[in-house]
Image (tube, rainbow, N blue to C red):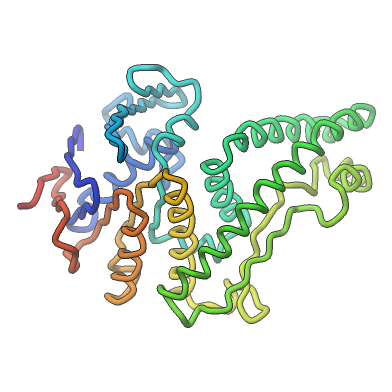
Length: 340
């Protein structure tokens, strides 16, 4: 697929074709434009292909008010260049804010069954879009944490007091923003589950900040000897988790794979819904949705995605029953054609 150009529907778009035809690559290109990375590979070379030196993704977004923005991202190896309306951007996060995007794909169940890192990234994406100061706080905390860990590895006990004074308020603020968003996610997920799967009623979400109830500065001081021994900061927002439970057991241990996928769908659509309420209607990507759910749950998930009001993209090997107002594409051997 050397070069592809699409004119999608502002609402619903379906991409059909056989396995391996390149359907998911179209969703992947949108994801890369929004996040600067792929959801399928961490190697840029896998996106470029065996002969090209770089890849480029360009899109035009149109707001409800008619404002048009032209967004572009070019990447080669570790070098990247992002632009918005012909102006170079210094941070990929500026693209992310301009093109909010929610992805549901076959591995999304890891939001429930996977490591805490999956839930931290999920929560942070939402906080990033609803709290303007989050990205600066997160970046400053990450830099201070890196400095503290370096000092711990080198045994520089004398500089830890000053680093803790820097790290603690940043970590506390990060925690405040995350906890506030987690409450909104919990409430919206509960409402969505009533429609998606009433059997999943009673889901509980426990926000764990990563250090406990004591002030963060005191925990850093109390754990200093242990941190020095291990050469890393063992407590803090970088260890935060959103523990999901049902009937007092972790969801990953008690729910089937199908139930985990439905719960993950509710979590992702909850974020899309919350963002839509703020006027930032996200693009929703549903990769191979029909293979993930039966027809009833397929229809329910699709309806919930479309209620958010943004553009929706679906891929599939077979054409599902869809609303009439849509655009359909077919992918074969890397070529994309609009279906009439």
